[in-house]
Image (cartoon, rainbow, N blue to C red; front, side):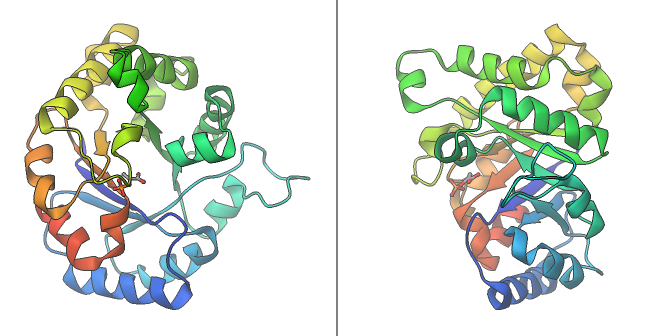
Length: 249
Ligand code: PEP
C-alpha cells in the first residue's frame, strides 16, 4: 500500500526561535495518524529541527540541494551536508525554485540523480501554469516535466520518490484545484507512469496535491482515490491549521 503523507513547506519563514516553538506545538498536538508527517524549515534551522524532533515521528526535509558533492558553489548546500545532520528527505522542483531561480528540468534531473545516489528520499514537485490550463495544455506540460526530469530513471528509483502535483496557479493564491481537478490529474500522472514503467510502480508511488490546501478543503481533496496527501505551504506555518489538515487524511 502506498504511503499517505502530509508535508509542510515552510519556505523562507520562521527564525530559529519561531522554528522551535512551531515544532514544539506540532510535537505536542500531533494526533495519531496513518500519515507520514514531514516539515521543511529553512536550511539554517534544519539542525535545530532535527534535534527538536528527535523523539517525534515527524520527519525533517530540506527545501532544496545542489547536485554536486562539494566544491566552488557559493551559497549552495550538498546532500552530504544534509545527511550529516540526519536530513534524508529533500523537496526538489518547487515552482518557486523553477520560476525565481531558473531551475530547469535538466538541472532537476541532475539533482534527482544525485539525491538518489545518496539514498535520499525526494518530494518532486511539478505542475502547470495558469496559461497551460487555460489553453488545455496542462496534461502535456505535466507529462513533459515528468519525462524530462524523471523518466531516464529505473523503475526501482520510484521507491525513493514522492510526487507532488502543484498547479502553479493554486500555490499561495487561495485558489485551490477542485478535488475533481486534482483527482483527474493524479489519475493521469499514474497512467503516465504505468505506461512508461508498469502498473506496480504507478500504484506504489505516492502523489501529493499542493496548492492552497487549508483545513476547510483538505479532507475532500484527500478523499480522492489517487490523492495520497498534500504538500502544504502557508497553512503549515500555523500548528492548528497543519494539524487540522493532517486530521483530514
Ligand atoms: C507550496 O508552496 O508548495 C504550496 C502548496 O503553498 P500553499 O499551500 O501556500 O499554496
